[in-house]
Length: 474
Figure (tube, one colour):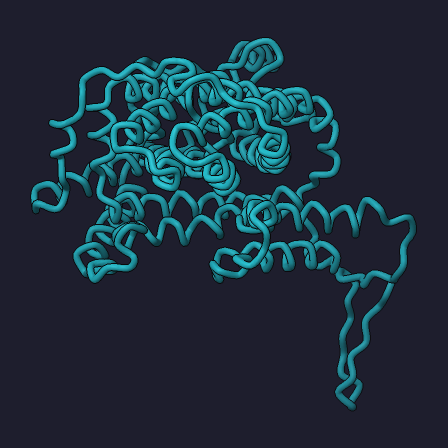
């Protein structure tokens, strides 16, 4: 009877991913995801808007539109309907891979809102292409073994950590000024990270699950008390701001911008595939080709919505993958709650201004932990790979090396054409493509064994008196 009762419980107990937590808990954990997501979310509209010469009012509108669309995209991905959405706790945000191509497209069309219309035509086209290609991409999951997905996640974490470290010093806007790396900034970052570590070490499970949120709130509160957190933007912001479809006018569809955005979406599809497998590893939920296809369809739908609602292409945010790993709260409905909060923040500019008041050093300290966790998930997956096998070792080594090219040496590809820089200028993109191509070269396209592998388990090295060593080959 006992085994039968246990089996009945296992059949009726939902998977932790599908667990619906109490509403206050959903709101609390969801808000933590919003804070982790927010800085990266606003960077894309800020960078694009500034590059195209948009006014301050237009830039604020672009940020609010991005938040609303990201919230809708997150709900689609986490909740899921029909064959759309991975039904995993994946937070969706505007992809950085598309930033350079969108700037090139917008500037080529004359900049300003006229440039945006061409960008949105390309974004809609890219979203439709991603949706239509999703079933075929889902069938390619056999080409993403642990050596590829583990390398991808490790690359994402390693490449994004320097972005977090920029915030630790005061943010990218201060990098050329005298106040970047000011001891005060380092003190805020160090204090925030120390506080998070203390909560993780001495707090109970409920506190550990919101350690990042507590660190962000605590660091911001201290900075405000000491006069280093500016809340003036909250008073100046409006209470209500609604994002309407085609706010800047009907999009323009130009052939070459459309083709460029399709290429961008192909790259982000590889990134999404790795994100889905990483989340499956973290949550213990089985991931297969159908799961990947549903995730990619959600990306396509969200990207089309981005073009309609004056926003951008969307992909899973690595920050929040790391947060799920740290908090161990794997319910996808927490992410649904985060999506609802994003929409509310996007509709209430004052709320967005309040979240945006988190100082860069405080946010950077939390991001260091979260991006580090993303790399840790990659290393965890790589732990299942035999890295003593030299082909696997080469895939990992070369992929990490190429990923660091645009990361460590920013001007490395500056002399390349714009279309080439759009692909090679991202360390994540370059490292991912390298891992995929090398896996095809070493493992998929290999028709026969061309060498003898070393039997590491039977490795018998000895000193025969002359200092030579021998190994048994198989």
